[in-house]
Length: 251
Image 1 (tube, rainbow, N blue to C red):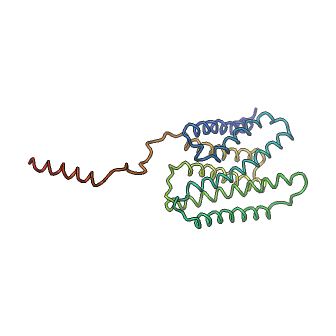
Image 2: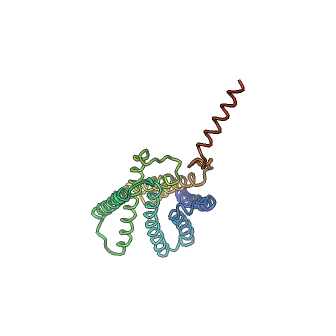
Image 3: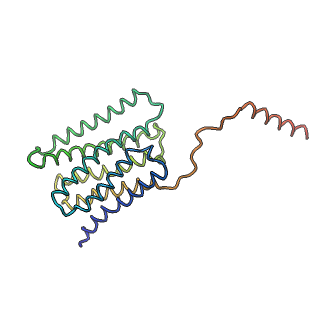
């Protein structure tokens, strides 16, 4: 077994272990209701990647299963974007603001898909479906990376900190998307052979899985106080004034 062969398997298996821990952590910390789409994405990747291990030497069957896995993963990855937006946008945002934000994202997605389509080779033969899948994946990756940049630039406006799980999920997708886009572009100009392309793409996903695991599994401190307990401030003021008067009369 060569070093590159061992590295590919290690990069393949390590995120599966992390994602199993992420699923367990989300169930234990009751985060499934907050991030159901991300939970479904993580579960699907774990299930499908584990299943592919049994067909790795099956050739055509493996390629078909891999294409189906990637197609659903891209759809779920796109859905995660809107789930994250639901958490990071201020609750007092007007419907018009949210609508404009979604329109900007949709415009970015459409422009990216158009540019990738124009620059791509003509879709012919048995590779047409594969090329369409690659087009969709590259568009989603660009959208995820762009959203991360926009959110980081607007963190103070949105009132976000690096402690938010939603920001951690977005950070993982953004890092992986950036690595995937670099791999796509370098592979298109033949700067990377298939092995190097696979390793760069897998390394980016490993970093993303590590980021998700850190945000989901890290120890939690005490939750912040959202509001003061219901009390009558007038009664508090009267009791405090009475106590001060008693102390003053004893002097």
